Structure formats: structure tokens, C-alpha cells
Length: 182
Image (cartoon, rainbow, N blue to C red):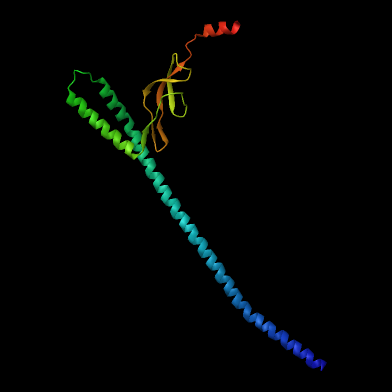
């Protein structure tokens, strides 16, 4: 009997091993399928990210192209402003109006594309202003007194800083030294 019990146990073990062997290839296939599905999902996500990055880069390139065009047109705008300021009252009104219309059309088109004039009033800002001269004034030191050349930004990117004259203290150096000695 003992012999039969051992044989039964051997048969059960073999049956279990056979079941395990038949399950194992199915499990392997399932694992492989899961792994392939995971890789496919990751690849699809990477491709979506690539498309988004590509669209963003194209958009940035277009913006930079527009900014370069606007920057190239700034000297022409300066010359238009000079021409308009050079006319006096005795000049023909038609010529002045024609130049004003051309100037306003160009400026309007650039502003519509994203260009803005830098507000140069107030305190000197080294990120937006370029000091071309200092002048004694009653204004607090470092205040923009006059704009020599307008500055512009394009979609918050600096195209050209404003060229400005900045105030300096109206007390002379000698007076400051005398005040320090006392």
C-alpha cells in the first residue's frame, strides 16, 4: 500500500508539473503582451510630446521671424518721426498728412503683430533704457528726463532699449565735499 501511495503522489506531482508547464507558456505570452502594450503606450505618449514640442518650436520660430522684421523696420520708423518733426507750419498740409498716414499704417501693422513702445517715463531701468547722457535736474537722481530714441518690445522680447537722458543731482561735487567736512 505504501508503494501505491507513493505512486499516487508521484502522479499528482507530475500532473501538477504538467499543469504548471502548460500554464507557464500562457503566462509568458500574457506577460509579453502586457509588456508590448506598455511599450506601445509609452511610444504613443512620446510621439504626442514630440508633436507638441514641434508645434511650439514652429510657433517660437515664427515669433522670432516677426521680431527680426520689426527690428529691421525700426530705423525707418525713426526716420519717419524725424521727417514729421522737421516739417513746420508753412509746409503743405497734404505732404504732412501723407507721411503721417504712411507712418501710422506701418506702426499700426507692427503693433498689431505684437510690437509695443517702451514707456520711458519715471525711474531709469537698465533692462529697458540705455543712458546716452546725464543732465543736472531738479528731478530725483536716476529719473528719465528725456527720450532721445524710442525703445520697443515685441511680445515681451526687447527689440531695442529706449535711449534716454537721465537726471543727476544738481549739487556740485564741491558742495558735497563741503557738506561732508562740516
